[in-house]
Amino acid sequence: MDFTLIQKIEVHGMRYKLLRSNFCRGYYVIIIQSKTDFCCESFSSDKERALDLFYEIAASATEPCSLRDIIVDMERHSVLVNKG
Image (tube, rainbow, N blue to C red; front, side, top):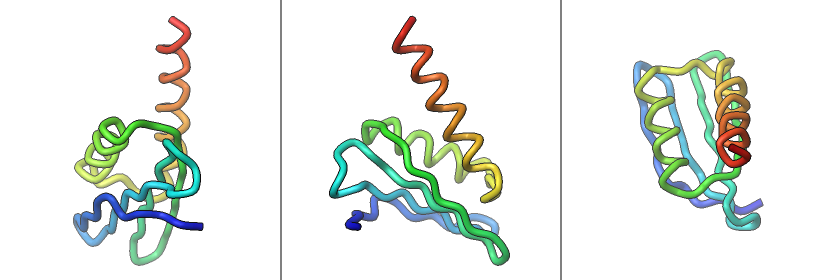
């Protein structure tokens, strides 16, 4: 697997990384790492929306255990908007 690091932020002891997939166009990965937990989730997006979501997650000090729910909600909303 091949990824390019787009952005990396450390906030309140938490590390946030946004990576772009080099093997699957239009896919991004967000990684959240604390001292005791780790989570990564991939999602389809354009770069601008991926960065917006990444900054929102980092600014709100999102815990790793919440990342999956945020991505699922974002994808669900995106489908509803596209069908509307």
